[in-house]
Length: 236
Image (cartoon, rainbow, N blue to C red; front, side, top):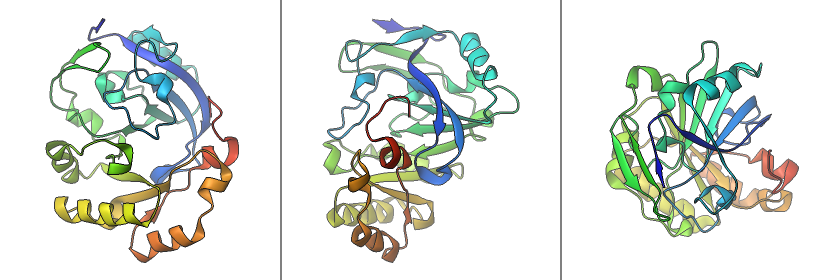
């Protein structure tokens, strides 16, 4: 299977609250793209990974822009899966504010040719930086708790950009040690970092001692409102 440059595979779309990161709580229209280059152990959207992971539908860029125009929400969340497999700069509609949730592996301004684990091939040209620098990029490098390796070249790129923040998901205090090592290694300021707690239940998000430690280390805490309010429900 191969995706051409104007096919966007969408797993689902819905209106909800942005659940986490630096814009948590915003009323938003979500476009969840299908396919991902990673396979994180704690991922809560495994149905987006591969061709046989779940249902998806192809759209052209014009069809997606029409879908975006049809919703009166100002904030558009491009999530996945991994949205940077696609030309996101071709989805801009005037009057909308775009947010991208990415694992950060692919540099958006560079051309892409990649085959993911199920054999699906993605090719796209580099995105126009004059467009995407106006997006709110939330970059989520994966810690060792996800059984993935950090891409040093990609994180070095993102660390230099003023249009992104970083989000990490942790299980315990040892993950905070790993985050601090990453920030020091790539010279990332703590005020650009949002830390969320792993889990899909209200109970998993209520760990005041761990949040106290996040605060003590000078990092931002990211509530995961969708997990607190709706658990593992899809479309939220």
